[in-house]
Image (cartoon, rainbow, N blue to C red; front, side):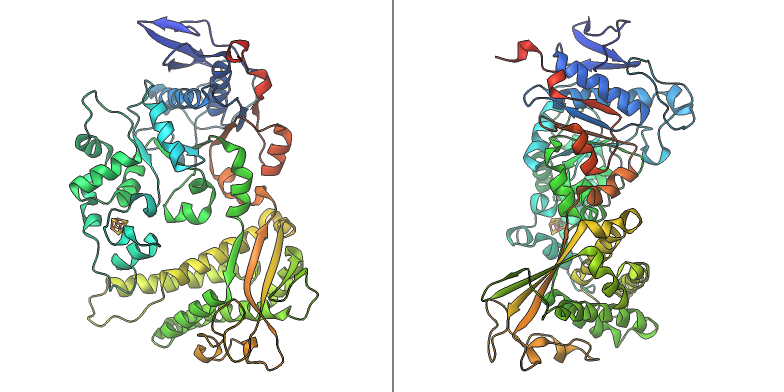
Length: 537
Ligand code: SF4
């Protein structure tokens, strides 16, 4: 049940000097107009959940103004919490209290790791799409909190202003190549050099037309300013996040560990709000799923072997990683004569439970048991690359590509998920091997040349290529890890944050949503409890 706004001054729905205030659990929220009962119920739950550090699952009908309620309540709490009185108090875990209680005992405090330089706990506001980021910025500009130090996260495909790189598909690779991430051979991007001009919120606002003072801005404005002053909006966004109290982005940036790492997002101790969260389950499953092709494995192995010969003391690390690529290929082919779950004239698919493949993976040295060693080897290989790029030597050694590094990162992530929840994660996976028919003496059916950079390119001949075996008709072209449980992909997010607030117009039944995600939501609100008759026409 929603708690009522306080009647003490500034009163619930109170109008002071033309401004509307509501007080929830001791936190005063300024609202741009008289709130609907559904918005009051939302704000009450949000404030309570943020104060207690508890997760909230809030359903409110589309069009009921929930984004405005979310922003006002969360940002009011953020300011309240960062008051000098609050900051002096110690951290302590939340305790149970009734919804209506003015809950803020002086001794309890937020986790320190999520507190930014302003003394405020950072709030990440996740939307479903980039388009919705713009809508949230519009809503934010209607509020008294529009001067919050904010940042928007977006990938290069939305922010790159380099005329050549942005015009090509695969903007990420183009940017990395240009910025010396390929063996120190790139010329560098002049827009990246200009990022210092947009290093902080004040610098950005000074370049924008803001006669009425600080306000929220959207990605298009950032890109426009970036073009005007020759500063890369992608790298500027990363700089702005470092000092932001509010970060807005599509929520897959928060859920997917690969994107989080790439964007250098640390959620530790932060508040995470996911708006329109009804797709979170699909995003979480996708975040924990992965596919690797034979071609990628061959390329990575060739990449590692190429460096191994000149790696000196690190030759073993390169060799071990190359062996992992080879062994994954061996595993892929090992089921070629098994019963198939799907078969037509060109394709066969064999699907195994995660728990069935784990032992084989561990025996081949590519399983969860080896993931720490893999991580260590990858770290050393990457440090080697960094050192080489920074060295002053004229003739630089060839180093591994970014794609090889990312392939291993993804493998390590999926192996981590397979061990999730004391290895129960393996039951949430299906592992599929997709076989393609080999066409002798030419192209394989619907695929690549059978004589690619395979066995012939392997220095130690690790990689067996089934197309070289006379009677073999099929070859596994891809290995797919399908995660069936959203709880697996959501794990990394829920464990790091101070609290999660999920809202949508359709989350019911809340209990099953909570079970699917593996998250306990102490604060809940169902749409049927918050619709006001006046809102229904
Ligand atoms: S640094 Fe920025 S502008 Fe330059 S290529 Fe990369 S993303 Fe594009």
